[in-house]
Amino acid sequence: MARVVVGGTFECLHDGHKELLKKAFKLAGDGEVDIGLTSNDMANKRPRNVPEYSIRKEKILQYINEISEGQEYTIIELNDPYGNTLTENYDYIVVSPETHPVALKINKLRSEKRMKEIEVVRIEYVLADDEKPISSTRIAHGEIDIHGHLKSSPRT
Image 1 (cartoon, rainbow, N blue to C red):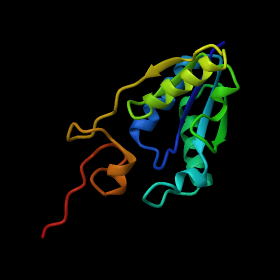
Image 2: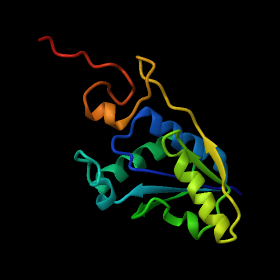
Image 3: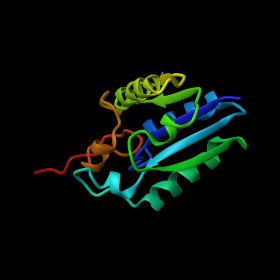
């Protein structure tokens, strides 16, 4: 049974985040998924207001209910970039191109601790209508919605 880990701020649960979570649950099969969700303290280091932890967690729970088929999962509050990855054994870590360097750092730290590396599964960005990646930043700036559809700019 596979143990899979995935993490993020999940500021607004957009289609890119949904692909990460789908991949994690698919890899886990009848195993388990640990979802690291950044704490309010970590999230508030961003240059914009991020929704409260409880709101972000609720959106993830709603989505998991749509995609999981009774699979085991745990949502873990992240107070650092690594969560349980330096103490627990996992088979896979699912990342985006943006978080790929963190996964490499995790494996480096695990190697130094003589722990087994976690297989890194990198999914590609989900692209918006303009062929640029969907991101929370672009959504927060009002460029696109959570599905990557362009928002019409106001006429000046």
